Image (cartoon, rainbow, N blue to C red; front, side, top):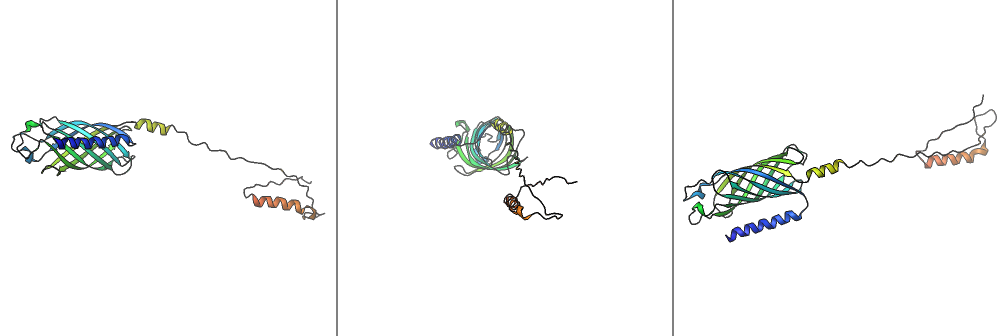
Length: 242
């Protein structure tokens, strides 16, 4: 019993870490089928395999990591409860149609005093759990998952397997998406065009296309300005001579 209290204490500590961390919460239901090692049944005549249904709560600490706690009770007459704390490691990104994941955690089984176990077979046991699965979003706020789990080691010498199907509701996902969708694009500032007019009195030599030398300084000033401003556009206008 002291060991069971220690396990629940560790789960409470892990859950408090989930609460303090930033991320997206999810709440869901699960169905699982557990096939437990026959060594657990000795010397009783009871069936330690069957269907379970329960609830789970978790939190995404990042796009590829979530922590969750779940608890389920037997619905097929097996008469024992199961709880677990797991880390779920996702591949891909949140926009993928299907995402594969691996999970690693700890299971706690409570068989109750009526199980009739002999000495050395505890009514409460813990096991390390490892699983592989696939999941996807079926809507912006909902997620469905399915995985196979292998459980064994720790404080009981048996190897168990299980299948779990989960349906989760992502809390706060809609509001976050709606907020991002309503963000207006940054306004593009129109480019300004500045017009500068320079009046030059330029005359040519008689009967030639040569500018008179007295206007060289004025033309040199205009040429320097054009060199300093690469994007300048020059428009030359003058009187038409019939």
